[in-house]
Each structure stands twice: as structure tokens, then as C-alpha cells.
Length: 596
Image 1: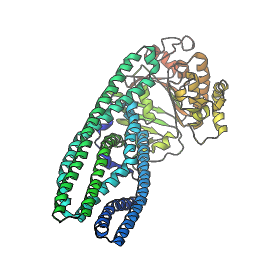
Image 2: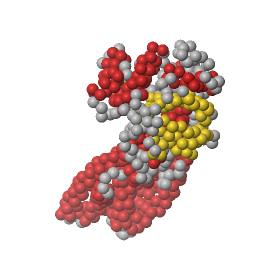
Image 3: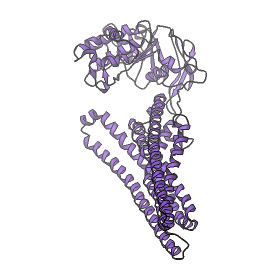
């Protein structure tokens, strides 16, 4: 299954420039932080100009007043710089964390708005990596890194300007050293971009394999494939180490290189400055201040170079995140979409054709369910039953034709207003970590405790709760571990009943369940189906019997339709699915019709 489907969408802009879309609040805050950063940098450079004044105008001239004035000014300038630096650090830290919060929130909201087609083309671990390791890479830069980036960049510019104010000759000598530094930085940038992009891909592969292994651990252990999965994990882990070592090798050349160029610049300035001092055209104070400013110039370069690796990693991570954010939602509200009132529940599938890829899964399918009616779909595996149900739920939009509810094309209505009136009970119900009551309340979060218990007791969940510690307050583990398939199904039925949907889809809700539990669930379904328009993907004849009409779906077409008794009298697909046994003998009828 592809891991990088979302990367096929070309983003409008790539890298960290896209972070500006997530900057919170009014821009006035950014302006104030910029002023604080400029003031802090100016105080750092201004301190060295006061050092020159203290040496030349105070100490060498023997003027104690000028010396005291320079010293007091130096202290005040540094106190102001300290206060501005504190304000800058706190402000940028808050800004960075808020941006990370906004990115993660927008990413999660966008993911929840994408259709099942997107999730069908991605591994769960790949998606998790976007929300975890990639966002963490942004956090590394936007936490303390943002402070370094802003303050060091401004300090670099201010220190260079101060050098020109101090002595143009020494400043020009410094400019001779800067081009090699910029060339080294450009070389590192081009190679590091690719290297850190690869590291994001390899860590995503490790996360994806880990999520798949944990999710399928029962199968891994049942077939004794622990070593196979372990070897695969080792391969991915080693590949991740290899790509990270390549990135670290680049940094091991870049960082010391910047430090070496800084040392060369200091030696050149001292050498030339010594000659100029001997000629009497340069003072000691100027030379000392120049060396101090030179350190102030190359220290930000070193800090920025150390940060550069994080910036490259964050840029690569942002490209991955951008790839997801730029993936359009293929099931979304159209402009002017209509909010649905309370539905009567009339469903009409009008000549629908649909394909996941090139080959159609459904071909020119039409059906009608009156308000409160019950329709059963049966057929061989892969015939298109579940796909048809997913189109009714609008998990997908048809390629041709239309699905209508109460005369409204689902593509023309607000999806949320439809989904609020839609209930789904799956073959493998998913329970969330939380209490039994929490899982029932998931169908309607604003329901009271009395309403939750009433819905639960109406379908028999109270029998499940009786054997659990804490009854309805019993904490369910993720996925419903510790509960039987039938118990999980009863809780999911209670969840659907509490939501009070007008349209209900049952996707093989009674499969893989023992006979006593099935009877309990069948009674729960009778309560759930009453007065609701429903589509049942049938697995057992006991479920089929309650339908007003049965449709046999084969290779994407409806090949037979009618009531159970009518279909069993005809030598056709339905009777073959039922095993050719009498409909009045439930225990003799085949347990399974088919499953998608």
C-alpha cells in the first residue's frame, strides 16, 4: 500500500514559509517582538562601542569622568538588553508553541475531513508520523530554536553595521571572510535539504511498521512470524540510522568549518589591526572593540549553523505536513450546500456507477427505500454491497449517477447535517478507551446519564455491564479488548440507538457471533430498526427475514430482488447463497450468505 500518496499533490509553497499561515493573533505582536529583538541586538553591539570609549577616552586619556560615564552606560545598556532578551525569549517561545499547536490542530482537523479513499491509500503509521515526529521536528525549531534564529540573525546584521561605524577598514576585512562562509552555508543547504528529507521518510517507515506490528500482533504471534517482523524492523531501523548518519556527517563538516572561518577572521583582524596600531592610525580601544564585535559577528553564525540542521529537518517535516494539508477533501460541502431538516428517510440510488481505481465496483445501480423501509443486500464477497452502503453514508461520492435522501442529492447538502441523522453498525465495532457509558454516549455527546442508561438497557447492554466491575463506569480498553465480539456489538447498537438516526446502515452486524448472543442482538436490532429507514448488509438469514426487500448484488450489479419467500422459490443466486435449504428451518439454513 502506498505511503506517499499525499505527496503527489504539489503544495503552493514548500518548507517553513508555510508556517506564516499558522501564525496566531494580530500582527502587532510580531512587530513588538521584532522591536525587542532589534533592541537586544543593538544593546549587544552598543556595549562594545562603549568599551572603546572607556579605553580610548577614559583610561588612555586619564579622564575618570569619561571612564565612569562609559562604565555606567555599559551597565545600563546590558541591563536593557537583558530585559529585552527576556521579553523576546518568552514571546517567541509562546509564539512558537502556539504555531505548533495550530499546525497539529489544523492537520488533525484536515485528516478527519478527508474521505475513506485517502485513508485507504495510506498506512496508519505514515499518517501518525505526520502528527508526531514531523510536528515534533517543528517544535524543536519553534521552541528555543526560534529565539536563536531571530536574535542571532539580527545580532549578525547589527554587529556588522557596528564594525563599519567603528572602523571601515576592519569591517571590509571581515567582508572578505564572509563570502567563503556563505558558500559553505549554500553547499550545506543544498545537501542537507535532501538528507533531512530522507530522514523524515525513513522515520515515517519505522513508525508505520511499528503501528502495523502492534495492530496485528495476534496474527504475528499466531503464525510465529516474530523474527520476520523483527528483521524487517531492524532493516528499517538501520536505514533510518544510515540516513541520520549521513545528515550528521554533513553537519560535522559544516559546523567546524564555520568556527574555523571565524578564527581566521579574528587572526586577520588582529594582524592588520596590529600593523595599523603601529602606524598610529588605529587606537587600542578600537582594536579591542573590533575583536569583540567580530566575536559578536561569528557567534551568531555558529549558533545559526548549529540550528541549521534543525531548520532543515523542520523544513523537510513541513513539506510532509504540507502534502497532507494540500490534499483536497474529495467528499466536502459544495458552496451553497443545504442544511437538512429532520429527515423522513426516503432513499433513492439513481443509476450509480463507482470505481476505486480503473475498474468499476458498481455499475448502473438503482434502488429505492421508502421512509421507514428496510432493504437487505446480499451477495458474494467483493460484489459491491459494502461499497453501496458507503455511498449511502457518503463516505464516497459516485462517479456517475446520484444518491438522494428525501429528494436531495447528497452532494448538495451539508455533510454534517446528514451524518447527524445517520447511524452505522459495523461488523467489527470499534470501541474507544473510556467507560462503557462513554462509548454509548459517543452517539450523542450531550445525552444525559439517564438517556445513556435507557438506550443501553433497551438493547441489553445492562447484561454486559452486570459482569463488569463498575458496571457502566467500567473502563474499556482501546478497541474493546476484554469484551467479546457480541458485547462490543451490543454497545455499538446502543450507541446507534442513542443517536436516534433516521437512516441506519447495518454492515453484517451479526456475523462471527455465537447463537445465544446472536438472539440477543437480533432483539436489539428489532428495537433499533423500528421506524427507521435501514440498509442491512446481511450475513445470516435471520437478519434477511426482517427486510421489506432483498437485493442480490453480484459483480457490481443488482441481479435479483424481492422478498425472501419469492427469491427462494426461484432457482437463482439467492437460493444458491442460502444453500438451497428451507427458509422455515433457521437451524438448517447456512450460517453465512456472504460478506464483502
